[in-house]
Image (spheres, rainbow, N blue to C red):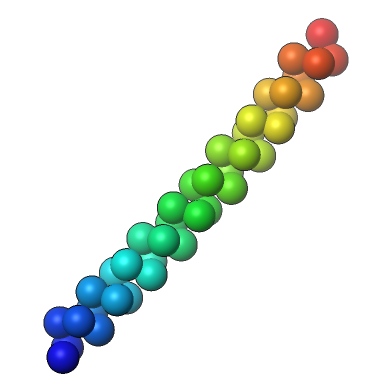
Length: 39
């Protein structure tokens, strides 16, 4: 039982990290688009 609980927690934190990195990448991409358009 304890093992499955720790696995769920691990998966949840991995999903959070993945979502955060995707968010950061989209923000960076938007900034790059603005820079390219301004030139």
